[in-house]
Length: 183
Image (tube, rainbow, N blue to C red; front, side, top):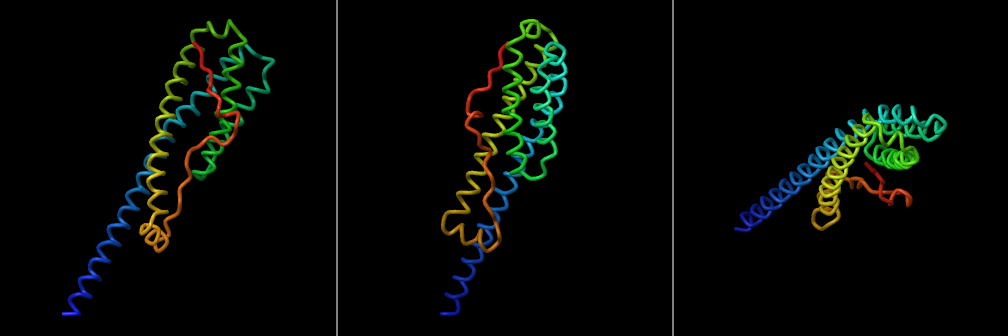
């Protein structure tokens, strides 16, 4: 009789371990999927930025420092290799884009240019996609991180080596301000 009780307890523990492990794998895969979806939107933005900069450059030739910082930040973000590095570099890019948007405000002829207006509209749509992707990514990462920290999930996470994932958050105080995109 005692053997059966021990066997049932062992079976319950094994089922719990398998279920917990599978839950972690599911959430890990969802975080990777969420980041991948966001990465697609970031790639669209990376591809659009050179056109945007070239359009602005035609009107604001003496603002080359701002334009160079935007391109440099774009290249750094594109070449980031880890999720954490990509988040950090993208935050820097977002900050430099704010200065580019502000620069466009100083040039009425630029704001009236049809090509510029189309690029600005595309960039605005892409920024909305990125914001939605970030919210979804952070939601999934939050569930994953919470499961890692809560008992008894933290035991399973430690056994199988599951680690916290980085949230996509604003790190610089000046990036907390709204990006002004005017039409």
